[in-house]
Picture (cartoon, rainbow, N blue to C red):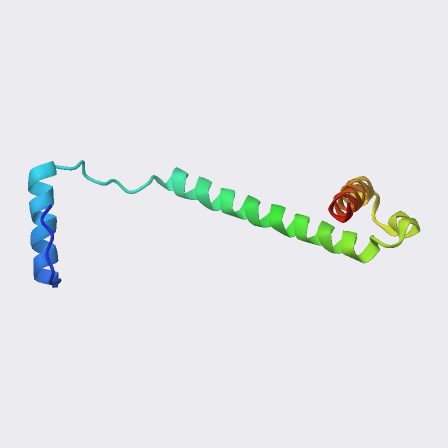
Amino acid sequence: MRLKTSKTDKLDAQMIRMYGESEQPKLWNPPSKMIIEAAELHKLIELLVRQRVGSVKQEIIKYENCSSCVLLLPANITKPVVRSIRAYRKRQAQKAT
C-alpha cells in the first residue's frame, strides 16, 4: 500500500479499491442467527456470573470481621463465603509479612 500525507474520502476510496483489486480478499459473510444468539447468551452468562461474584464479595465484606455472622448467610453460599474469607485473610496475612 502506498502512504499518503493527505487524507480524504476520495483517496480512501481509491486505496480501498486498489487493495481489493490487488489482494482480492474473500467476501465477508455476516454471522448466522445461531451464532448471534450464542454470543448474546454468552454475554448474558458472563453478566450473571459477574453479578453473583459481586454479591458474594459484598457478603464477604459485610461479614469478614464477624466469624459467627457467617451462620446468618443463606446455606447455598455459606461454604463459598467461608472459603473466600479464609483465602482473603490468608492473602492479607501474606501481604503483612
